[in-house]
Length: 148
Image (cartoon, rainbow, N blue to C red; front, top):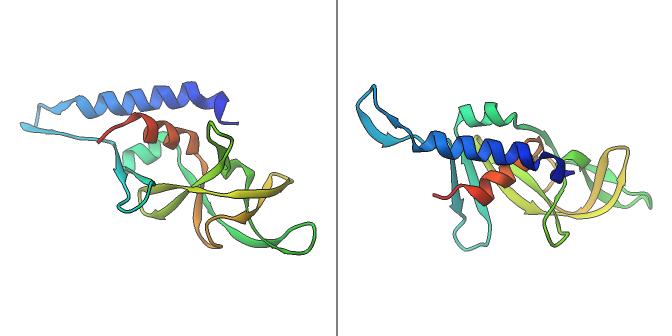
């Protein structure tokens, strides 16, 4: 569950934030290099987290695609690893999608069932959408802790 990894997420957010404060003194470049950027998605209440390749490697981000499947009643369901499911403080489920390179967006899901480390969802990103299976708790920490 996400709570066991909060200390790691906090440490990574802190290190990303602190490293973004340093200046490239040797090159004479006075611009700060941010490893993570959080952007509001216009017209929604969603945010996108944009990372540098270095940050993706440091956070150990891994993804897999959502699949079509069947629930216990034989109905259609979207299937993703349970590791891709997280819960917010109100108990609502979500997953992080990877809509483009280095970009991650939190998306709500409605979990119908959990079996064999797989989540069967009735509402969520469509089949084929990459979702984060490792590193989502760190993305949540970045989203909540790093400002533009």
